[in-house]
Image (cartoon, rainbow, N blue to C red):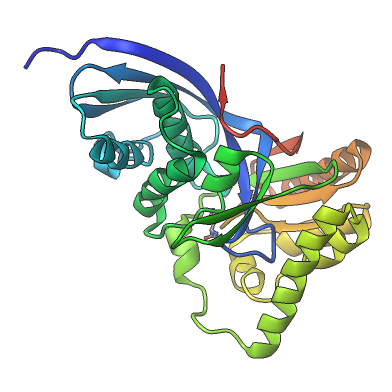
Length: 311
Ligand code: HSE
């Protein structure tokens, strides 16, 4: 077979994301300004997907098993045209960090491919394709990283089948993230969850979800802080994260509105009203993990309003 020629190409940044936002397991997420992956997507004149990695992470090269490849296979099936894509990925969001690494690859690939096709697909279509990447990564099509990565800002996924994505306006918020350098696989972190919840816990949880969304929309920082509580997932998953309780207690005492596990962990995030508090929170996080003796990486950032950005 002749080697494929490159028809056109695009370079983009795909942001990290915080899924769940503490109480909204699988239904809430936000996009971060930092960190982000850089990707180049090339339109080829022959069918097929090529994955090229420039970052040294041992991710699958087989497109069907790769979080950027699987969504593009789904897109090509729908297009039914003799074209293909090459995706060149430079990951800065570590796989297994809890900051939406798989979603960034999936979302970046489909946004880039769509750009090269003259934006034939809607954002909702792109989420639908990108979900195949999450299925490859964790076995489940959850959109709480994908949707904010593609839409930017804070998103509510009211339903997956059929897709119903709602963008939630919010006041300025500063996000501090600490990534203790251990890997938690989302599939493992889902496996350990209880399959049933008590009604009293469900009532408390949906009170918090409604409160959090109302707090964002009303710019009510106190309500946001009160609603950042998770009585269902956090008690189980936090056991996997050394120092979790201490980080949370100290950061809240220092003035953070609240926070918790970022996605399925091990990263922990905190929301703050002002930048100074966000930096104070970073210092406390660093102190805890330095004392525990666990390598860690921190980010002080804000909410990314744009999502995947073509550069
Ligand atoms: N909602 C997903 C989970 C997010 O918590 O398993 C994974 O990033």
